[in-house]
Length: 115
Length: 112
Image (cartoon, rainbow over all chains, first blue to last red; front, side):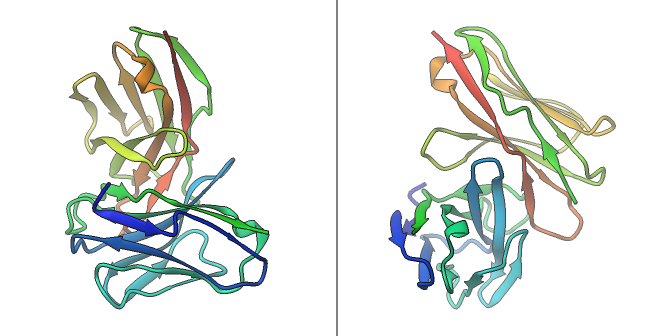
């Protein structure tokens, strides 16, 4: 969806390096989410945020850090990348903007490879 | 741990037929249910939401929910080759959390 952008779209990095994936929304919807998608595991929630400066862990938060200083941006940082973090990462936002329906829009994704 | 189960497929149906996709969930307190379609190499796209028992129709798509049996299904009528994708079932428990639990998806192939 044009209202959610992710950058970079593709990234190759080495084990041990720090990597930041960016998610930006053109609206001001409250909730933002980070998922990873792996074969055999499906979509799993890493972190989510209910508003600026409010974040919470999802199912698989270890090895990741998030922040949300501005409503529009929700960066995801891999502090020291490992091969097991090779995945496709999706950012999502709540569709209605108020967090009342639980419907989510997904960004285009970032394919990350850790060598 | 909350679980959402789907047959991985592939489910193959001829063009024009009805495709039936099923999903079961473990958390009896779940309140909201969603179907997403994901084309290969693309992001998931919300196609149906259902919140109460029964059927909900939107064009060629019908979602069915049975909370007593803890299953939700998606029917696609007059299947088209463009419906070939992976369909993800997602469930929200409603227990004070905004998290969705996703199934691993069912791959649908519509044969011309």
